[in-house]
Length: 455
Image (cartoon, rainbow, N blue to C red; front, side):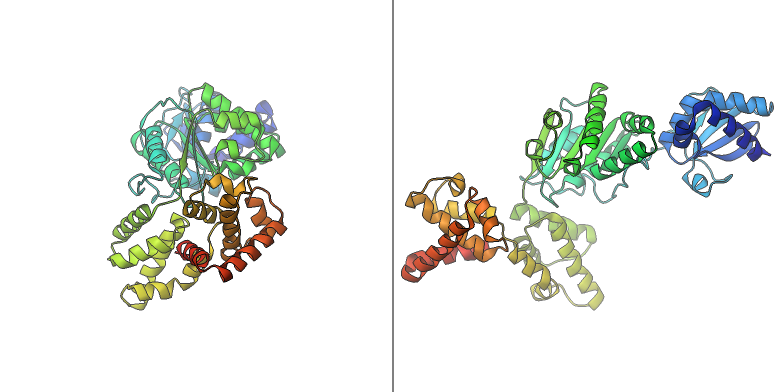
C-alpha cells in the first residue's frame, strides 16, 4: 500500500516541479520504511538528502497527509544500498532529515565526502607525507588550510611534476577536515570529472542542480586543473563556480602540473583568479628526501630493508615518488614470494627494466643545468643568441649530450636551445666529436659530464 501511495504522490510532485527538477532530485527517491506514523524515504547521498529535505520536505508531508491522514511525518534518510536496489529497504539509515519540520537534522556521525566526488585514499594522510626542502612550503600551506576554518589565502594552488605529492596533500587535507571538523562539507574531484558532470548537466538541461551541487560546499578541491585548458565552456562554468565560492568565504584548493601563469589554453581571467591566492610548488625530490620516503615506506610495511638497498634506490630512481615507492614494493614482494633475502644484487635483478628506463630518462633541462654549472655560465645562456666561444662551446656540449643521452629528435633539441634549427644541433654534435678526437682534456671533460648525468 505504501508504495502505491508514493507512486501517486510522486506523480503529483512531477507535475508540480517539472521534468528537470524531478530527474535531478526526486526520481532517485525510494520508500525506505513506515513506522509509527512516519514514512522514511531514502536517497543515495547526503547532499541530495539535504536538498530534498530543504526544498520539498514540507510539500511531501502535506501530500502524504492528504493521501493518508495517519501519516504525521516524512523523514528523508541516506541509504545508498536501498536506492541502488530501487525498492523498499529495511537497512538502518546513516543520516536522517525530517519534514516535521522540514529542516535538516543530521546525526553527528562523520559525513562522507560526497559520491559526487572521488574516493579518498586512506594511505594519503599528513602522517604518511614525508617532508623535505622540496615540499615543505606546500606541506605547511596544506596543513594551514586543513586546520583553520578561515585562511588569508584563497585559493591554495599546488603545482609540480608527476608523482611529487600534489594529490597526496589534497587527500590529506580532505581526511584531516573530515576527522577534525566533520561539519565542513568537502568535495574532492578531478578537473576531468568536473567537466564530464558539467557536460552531462548541459545535455540533460539541468545546469541549475549542477551549480547548486558545486556551490554549496565549504571546501572545493579540484585536481589536475590543466585538464580543462582549451575547453572554453567548462572554464566559464569553473570560473563562475570559483567566484561564487570565494564570495561566500568558502575555501578552494587546486592542483596542476604547472603554475597558473604557465597553463597554456587557460583564459587570462581564470589564470588571474588562480594566481590570486597562494601558489606553492613542489620541487623535484632530493636524494635525502627520497631516502626518507623509502625509510618511512619500509617502516609502514614492517619489512627490514638493508640501508645499502635504500641508498641505491634513492640514487637511481629520481623521477618521482610513485615510481620510487613502486620499486620498493616490487623488491619486498619478490623477497616474500620467492623467499630470498633483500640484497643489492636481488634488487638490481628484480628492477632491471625500471633501472634501464631510469638511466635513459635524462632530460635536456638537466643536461643544460649540469653543463652550465660545469662551465660556470648562466643557465639562460643555453638559449641566448650570444655566440662568443665562452658561451657557444658549452652550448654545443649540451646539444651533443642531449643527442647522446635522450631520445629527443634534432628539431626538439633545437627548440630547447632558444628555438634553434636542427642543422645547428647537427653542427654542434659534429664539432664536439671533432674536438674530442683532437683535445684529450676536452674529451675528458665531456666524458665526466656524461658519467655525472648517467648517475
